[in-house]
Length: 361
Image 1 (tube, helix red, strand yellow):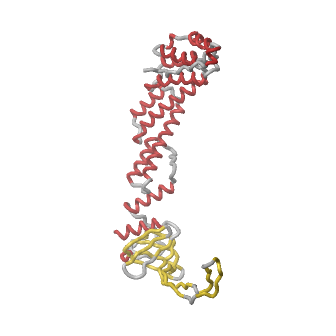
Image 2: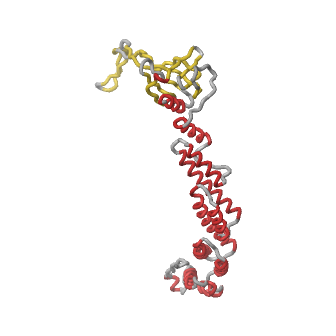
Image 3: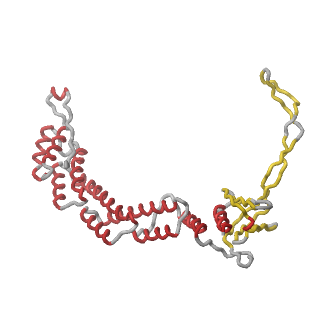
């Protein structure tokens, strides 16, 4: 395989031909070609071979075309790292190439470290892809770390970064349906333990989101949470939800309209008048919500209870046919009688989910 990329020669300009002056850029093209012809053993080249080319074009080998010389060095570095190992021989070859290209330690050390870290990160990412690290994989990473000359502190940082990235991806996927199952909880805990994640960082979700979605799943599939009741309940009656709400029912209400006969006209343009006045009042009957009671809201396995300052309202769950959730409360449809709307400032979805679960049972 060709290690060094070919650098195309720049065409000599008319002015350059007249003055017999060759483009300086072509020095890099010749140096690249020279290295390509000795890529199997660059130790056969020395600084004198490079100096002949730079003198020919009047190029300062230390200050001119640093970016091009760096790219030539990168080509060889990528080749050396293609097997994800930097051998002693390759280390010597890189050091020799650095001298040939008049590069300083500060020019190449960062590049070597960056490329090595990139390869090690890819290896770590592959290892943590199943959410655990076996003893065999730990040994393989240790060997890779040594082969790529990765610092211990850097290796730890890379492992933490890739582990957190995998955890973040799984956590986000688990919460994407707004439910966290028992199986997902077990998987999340096993990932944290197996990858040694001390403080998981999840983008886009909070601890409150996790707790809420866990509760959603439990309401639909697990044991409904039970609460100590502050009021007396019947035998075999348990409290599952406690909050605040307003019991509302529809009432017929007449609304007066006001439009009248002509009592005056204002001429606008020819053929059009603006009419002023009113007609005898008429009324339209509409359905409106009326607050019957507001106060503490209780949901048990038998009843829905709302206790207010002026009285109580109670509804047996067996009389509810349908539950409709809205952003500000829950609409309950009954077989007979007034169907109430329970207006709520907080957690109407939890109330509705529990109610549906209890009705279905």
